Structure formats: C-alpha cells, structure tokens
Length: 178
Image (cartoon, rainbow, N blue to C red; front, side):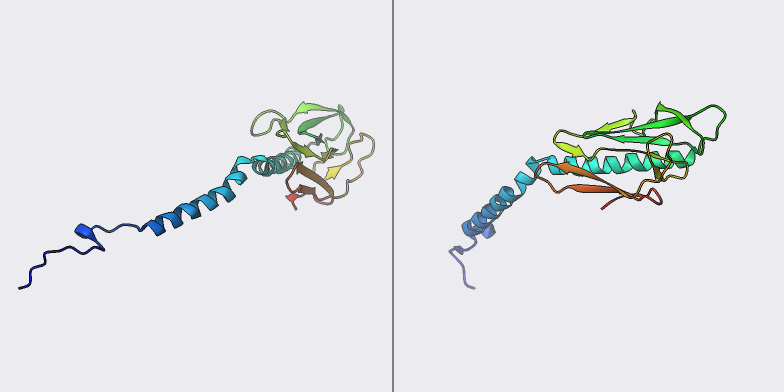
C-alpha cells in the first residue's frame, strides 16, 4: 500500500473555486452590462411615454364604449398635455343620438377617477376635439354639423424618444396604436 504524504497543488483540501482569470472576466462583463443598461433605466422618459400612450388609448376606448353603451354623445378634448372627456346633454324632448345638444359639460368619470388624464412633464399631444356619436364613430365638435370626422392620428411625443401615434378610425371609431 502506497501512502500519500503530499497534497495536490490544484485542489488543496479538496476545495474547488474560481480562478483569478474567471473572476476578472465576470467582473468585466458585469461592468459592461451595467454601463450599457443603467442609462436606459435612469432615463424614465421612454417608460413614461409608453405608459401615457396606453392611458390615452384606454381613455379614448372608454369614451367610445360609454357613448355606445349609454346611447349618448361623448366629447373628447385633447390638448397639448391632457385628455378631457365629457358627456353631452341633449335638448329637452329630442333624441339623444340625432337631436341637438345643449352642452357637453358633464364629466364622464373614468375608471381611475376624474374625467381627465394629464401628460407627464416633457410629453405632448396633438390637440384635437371631437365627439363620439351613439354608434361610437367620431363626429365633428360643432353642434350644427354632424359630419363624420375622417381618420385621425394623435401623436404622443416625448423629447428624445420616438413619437407614438394613436389612430381613431373615421368609419368605425376603432382606437389603436400604430
């Protein structure tokens, strides 16, 4: 029987670990990934732009669905930094869908509360005002002329980011992001 009196230099006491080269390689890779990924997380503008675009889509869809479900006109006013939604009241004794409108000042309460959403700082919208009729189609915001509005694009722009576009189809009122 041969007795070993020495230990192997490669694995003293049977313990294994990483070599210095492996540790340095991992640290370099983590450093490169941090240098590339960290600035993307530090600039919140892209996330805010995406989130606000989703809010605009949801608000417009809710307004359209409310107009259809309750057979009433809903006015949408898009300003440079906000979207406001109001219900139109009809003149006394006329049909809600075909008659004249006295005012559009009653707030349509959105699921999140209130009747408006406001853009975060640095995000702007294309201003536009229209109404959804009782069939959910966008129509002119003039009381006397109920002409259909053509397909409308609303740009959601954030400085330094790609502009997102929300489209409202003129024939059906379908709201989608391009």
